[in-house]
Amino acid sequence: MPETCTITINGATRQVARGTTVAVALLLAEQPSRISVTGEGRAALCGMGTCFECRAVVNGILHRRTCQILCEQAMTVETSR
Amino acid sequence: MTRTEVLVIGAGPAGIAAATAAAENGCAVIVLDDNLSAGGQIWRGATVQETGSSSRGNTTKRRALERLRRSGAQVLGGRCVFSAEASGMLQTLQETGSGSLVEQFHFEKLILATGARERFLPFPGWTLPGVFGAGGLQSLMKGGYRVAGKRVVVAGTGPLLIAVATHLAQEGAVVSSVVEQAALAQLAPFAASLWAHPAKLVQGARYRAKLWKTSYRIGCWVLEAIAGSDGQRLGAVRVTDGTRTWTEPCDLLACGYHLVPNTEIAQLLGCELPGDFVQVDKTQRTSLPNVFCAGEPTGIAGLEAAMVQGEIAGLACAGVSSAPLQKRAAAERAFCDGMEKAFALRRELRSLPRPDTIVCRCEDVTFGSLHGYTGWTDAKLQTRCGMGPCQGRVCGPAVEFLLGWRPVSVRQPLFPVPLQAFCFQDERVEINKMNEPIKEKA
Image (tube, rainbow over all chains, first blue to last red; front, side, top):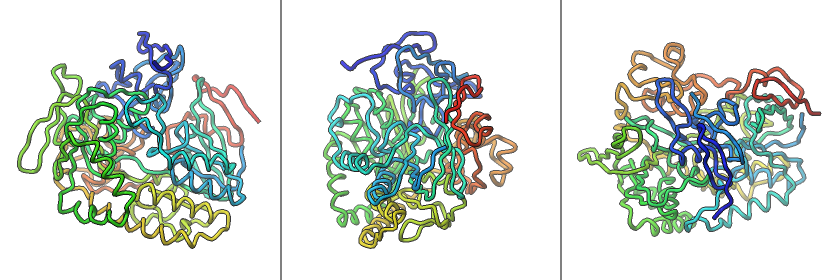
């Protein structure tokens, strides 16, 4: 088994393999990265930092492109609303 | 503020080849990339060890990265270029754990190796979770997304589809079909031309061998993504061949319509773009004497073209002749023309979006609400289409295909940045989450 780290997604604790991107952690937790302006839950689309669909709140910082960030121990991630 | 002789933007195959050639010939070289590590999209490394047979190493990539490391060129990852001046300066934003870091780079010569992104076309249901880009899903797999046992349809157009389907199959996904919009008559001349490129042919044959369980549906396209029983996630896709329409149940859809070049920095600098691509001479020099461009922004031609063009650009910056390489570059350019014809988009795809289909995902602007406008300026002002964080990178190429609107202008910032990023002209400044500068470094 790969080494894991523990993160919090929308208040729930999740274990993910070390090296997992935050966008993938959101997919695995079945949580949307953001709620669109008309209220749709969205998830990563392009996976390479250009579409901004995966942006979420990471460690309290808004609008982070989660496909470009790796999960770290004790990181908090919240759906962008 | 950092000074360098040669600055390379993009650490994919073109940027790696360019930086290596320039540094091996005595130039001081810095390479910047938005991604965390070098490799670009085609050589994106897995950040979590993959479990299937795709986890074997790639020799070309390993050699290129090793040679880059030995060349002495410095690679700085996680840097997003948001402004640039042809006089020799550009600014980057790096997202750090506590905020953002703004840096300035001064250069004598600039090599743009900014690659390409996927073209997305809107269709009903394409905003449902479970719908990804084709390259998009592949990159998420490399970021730890496990697809084993999932039913996947791969759709759109271009050679990337087969590569993505193969990767999915190797990682244990059930790829029920690859849906390629190009007609057989359109693909045949391109397929025949592959005999002149044995390496590409071998690659293609290897892919096909791994996809023996998958149907390859040529001349077909996805009409609609349909939500599953929970109404929240993808459950199936509707596929057509133009006369017959059927439903394919799936957990994931990987859908991309070939590639569009990333030319924003070139446009901002004022390089000539006669059409969609940056104009370059035989040494990859753009219309600006100190700016070079290599790889996909000069024409979507793939890995081999990117590497040879990159090397030519790097040699040109070092003042070394690249004449022996130029014949190979010309052959790769011919391959690019063939590919463009083979995967040209069929007009039926223009009628995929319904009036209530979202076109601009950032601002949820529907196709119907664009009706009555004649171009970008009007539509942006009235509907906010293309005004969100991606700045039209997704809806721009889609709207160009659907409505024929050409992009109007490129302005800084090229990516959304904190306002403070513009306030500190000569510093390396870290901005914390309250958007206050907290630290100034020499």
